[in-house]
Image (cartoon, rainbow, N blue to C red; front, side):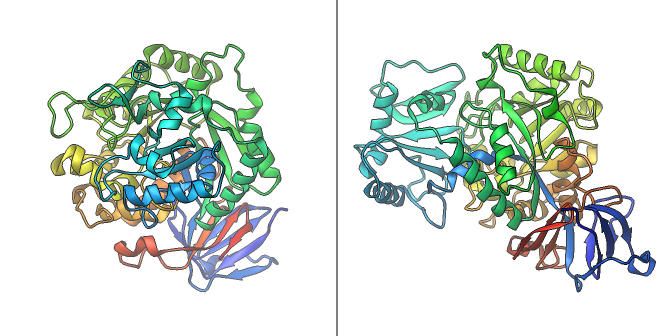
Length: 532
């Protein structure tokens, strides 16, 4: 139902450079038709809402998350503080889960980060066996690029000392050549064939529940960057929308799972920008993660002279994705954390003319941890967008220090430098692929960008912090543009009335308290979908 009303008495931040601040707004049929100072408010016989000085922002646009995975993880063991601080506590949680179910059911968990565990190491098959030996166990690392499985899971998947490493992946082995249960990058897919699949109805129900969580966090639009397993969830999103999922969603297809299917296609109608649920393009994985020492760097990781990480995507897969995106005139997104991975995809697309029809970038580069000057310059020239996550340094500081050292760590995520140069940049969380108990919460992410101080107090490089205004623009206007959303991300005439009301003024509280802010109300197209 279209909503028509007047907002007065608000401290409105618009993300619109033509007028960043206002106190009043007119919404007609879910669209903003006027915004400005109350003294200039046109006379309209509409219902009026007085916000009594509350801070208003555009709805957050999380341009990079894995929504179906995030929704599913709500049913699994969370291996993050404050619930789990050690491998021993993880073992206890696995034992507790086993007592609640039969021997043939998989036990799954997510979020472990060896830097946060008391033992300062990854769990292995033998640790998980102590929690449960007669049922398969799979625990996904926080970066989602590494799985740890127990002996039963290895047995079911047929993985033993004679199993070769797949291309772009690695099976960790002990001194006798036996798998330790740690499966890196493409090797993590070796167990997918024996793991249980969610039913369609379960996925739909979990998406509806996730929409409620996102609304409470002020997130009004998302980019779903694909799944770790095959499957097209477009129709499931449509059904979830019928049952109460309210966010706008741009869906990216993980090309690894579709490239070999000659019948695969995305109907042109799915790309329509006026849809709540729409297709946006393809996603590729170009390298791994800093925390897993698999991001493909141009200098070696700390403590070694020859460990640079690894490329994950073959040239053939990358070329087929580019060809598909050019044919469909849709976006290509590529995960590239390390300098070599960033240079590879930016350098390859640099010679191509823009192939999308709208204002959205034809190439999005995801994470962009350690870009070179040349890659930044090429991205600026060609309008390529960088989608990054300040929450990574904030929440995963232990592994960044261990793997890069303090000096290199402070140079990563050079957000201020990229903005000063003119790079198209936006923020997101990559939820749930980060070490935070509530990974989709925007406020710790913003706090990390504004303070450049990690959750444990570590200085992450003060030269690269940004002000609150900039951080919000990057989480609203710039995120909407990177994901190809139209008429959202800003509060201005002609745009949908997607906005949020905060319980504290993000511009006046100390930056170190930003993560304490909560959302009181969330509106999409003028309809209040959440009330605290």
